[in-house]
Length: 203
Ligand code: CDP
Image 1 (cartoon, helix red, strand yellow):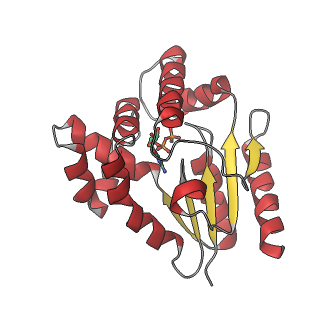
Image 2: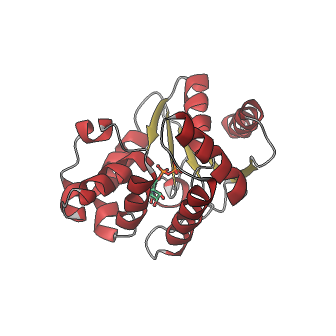
Image 3: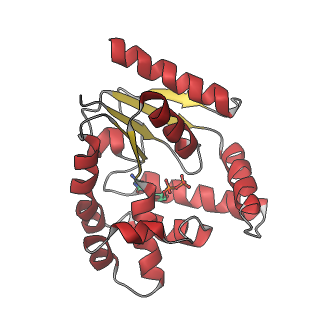
């Protein structure tokens, strides 16, 4: 059985939480594609050239402990604008999407570029303030000392860069179901995602 669920959306929209829950619900494998770009971005902070880093990426690179920092997120969105970096990561993502047993991929361009024929597509969003508030709490809970305004600035900067790049810009696929989680709790957002996917599974 092959069934691909594409979950895209702007920074800190809750794609990770929803994707993990959706994958567990259906028993599908999950790939956080943001981690690929974060791992490449992190290598550039050590001085490695972005395209070379993307071409040589290994599973161990995805295990680095500091991939969730705002510095790495910024570096990720910079390397993500380089077409050769995106190209180097495409085959891996496409193969993951079509693995047997079903797959959930979350990112920015899954429903538009990586897997335009995905059986179910969601575009998860929320206001920039709500997203920044959630990310701020997450970072503080993880021991990162930061401020709300700093996080808001990061979120807005990355969104602008991700939406305005020429190659695979962040935007909803025409056939994506939009889920605005601004006023939804985690359980409500997960339930909305599962309801939208179930509608595609039985269609
Ligand atoms: O968790 P958060 O939403 O903050 O970010 P992420 O999903 O880990 O993605 C980090 C950065 O990688 C994004 O700002 C994008 O620039 C880039 N990215 C992308 O271009 N395409 C993807 N499919 C996933 C991430």
